[in-house]
Image 1 (spheres, rainbow over the protein chains, first blue to last red):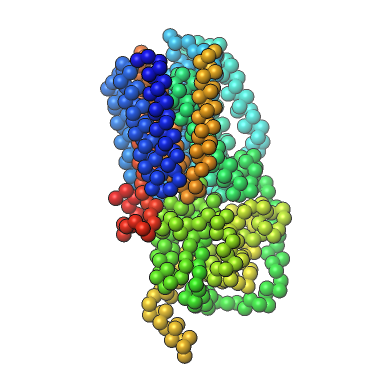
Image 2 (image 1 turned 30 degrees about the vertical axis):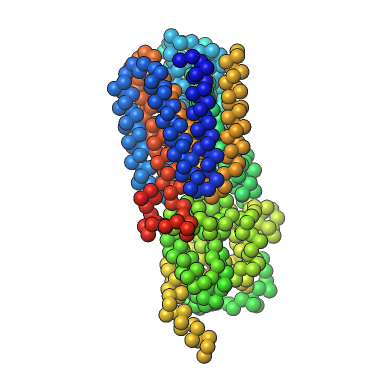
Length: 480
Length: 105
């Protein structure tokens, strides 16, 4: 095939991918776009198989079938709450693939690489391996298989720099070596990169996970692009660069949504844990207005009445809702409120959940209409006119301290302005602060009712309060 | 040298086009977007296949097979998960299955 035809074919595959990504504007379009991209890649694979003579077709077929079948099986079975762990795992697999290809290309004796190819090979190898270990760690944290808080070693930064230096030195050595010493140097590079990825990711945790997972998305794409330069394949470079761009954008979006500087996140940034203002400093006059020692039972009764009387309700779900597995109950509550003629919507903070957009998927799974899901900037102006806000398992993203208090870890972070609503119901497990450690001043407002306990049970109880008989009862009470 | 320039151009152009396209994706779809880009970065499968177009020692073959399998895992897994997730998003205009847990039923 002439190079012109090859170029044209490559360009059409890239065009198909562009069309696929461009359809990610609406959920329906996204599904079609995903199919488009799948067709484009299938086409690319068939073309490569057609153009080249495969020397071990049996092994190739076996590896493809095994990898593909496991991928399909896992993808069919994974639950939506496991998605972040699964996606992180896939970043890791992408790193392995890139690393393995770079390794084979670099050790090939009979096909000497250009200097550019060689440098790209080292980069693909190292970035791929570091992405692998970082992603495995992230995946384990997200699957709650290891502790989710950041771990900081003594001299953490120095350790990272030392590892980078070791990797660089090994690559310089490998560039001049050949045969066994080359292979050993590459294996050393691999090992050092795996350690680098681990050390890098281990001090990121908790609410910073969305940043880490987005960043690993970018590095996996970058590793693929470097592989493309080694084998001089335009498609690999193009796809890798696109994915790197996507990961970079999501990383920036997540950082902005938390008002955290990227470098702060990477350095395990909880250094910002400012001396937490004593909870006693909470607005003092409130005490007088707020009936002391209100029992949960009283609070629940009042909450039910508030919900029955409300005209507009905004639900703010947080990761606590997902942890309690309460999304189906919450969706049922929203449906019931709508049946009773109230306007209901969901306010989704960009970092709700453990990866970008995770909360939307969780609510979609619970059968919440996606046009009821409203983004922060869109929903914030409507809080003052809202009768009741239901906070379910969220803390930092509704903490007014982010606006009111300087020098806390969340100061300046954009929040959902729940505190502006007429009444606020907080269905959290306890009164403890969120990941940031900053006490939530929303809890102390006179407009706030605390319904502490397991969110699933609390929401179910609220739902019972809205059952037909219960509503009639209240109406009778009101009439009487 | 011309090759290097071309490759850099391809990289820069794709990064630019990708950047513009992806900045327009609404936050609603960021999770499916990330899982689809995972599948797209499994384009490394082409590189893995090409390894098998040249003679290799047994050790390299094993490493090549690992590259193939992991890329195939991402390729299939990424597209299937994205399809399931995007299939979950419904509006009241469309009939929504009673069993909200099933993605692509």
